[in-house]
Image 1 (cartoon, rainbow, N blue to C red):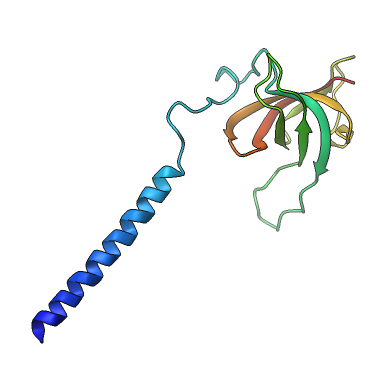
Image 2: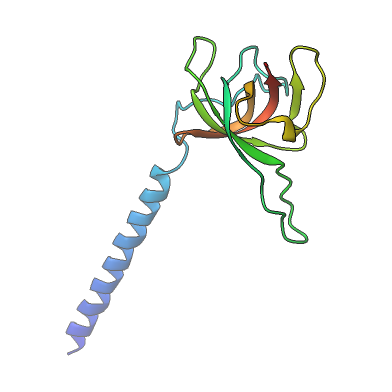
Length: 148
């Protein structure tokens, strides 16, 4: 009887080990890939010389107000859709706009507000930080240039 109990305990421990090892491998597989796309920009806080995406705003999403005490400061998000061009990296992107995101019109250099990013506006977007490689990609904008 004692041997059967010992065998049962060993089988349970082995099963737990297999489950934990599988979970650990799953988390490693979902992590960053070596050789993946580097963050945009040169690491000096300035945007790269060419935009990450150029296209038209097709959707605008304004976040719900954060609960009291929350540190979420996102202004909103826009979906930008365009063509993959020689000087761009993406053709579709959900772009997060933060308070520090610079938004301006190329025609006169005037600064504008998030509310000026309406459907149909042509933009160039420069990303900062990591890019989530879903489709469409998801990234935070350091700069948005309105081309119209």
